Length: 164
Image (cartoon, rainbow, N blue to C red):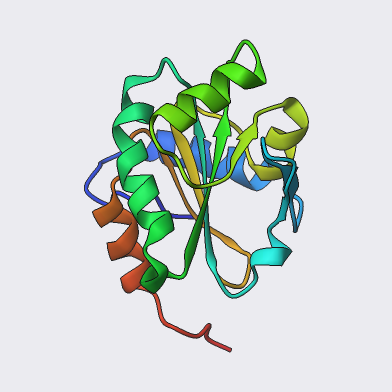
């Protein structure tokens, strides 16, 4: 599994620890979540598209900083990418929907619960982002701020069709 930002250096022991944790994390082959509008989203339902799942919170400055880039990624049909935001650490659904509406967020927002986290992957800090390829395999994760450019560069560097 790769991070979206390749310029960071992580000490070998940390990389080994993260690898051990990632391999011990049992992740479902598919996820099924319901957004704040009542629409169900499944990883298998987006087969053929990149899927970016972003854990965030209303009080998190880097989360708020990346929202315009996430909106742009979701809106750019050339990317063949869907963004799903998972709101964490909230008081109620209205707080989250009002906040997202105020920022003109047009991608689906899911209320984070332990069940949602078990399906997608652990929250190692906010923001945490998981990227799934068009075949539904998690191929990258990033703890911390992501940018539109980093995601687009990552996707552009991958072959259009999987190797057999």
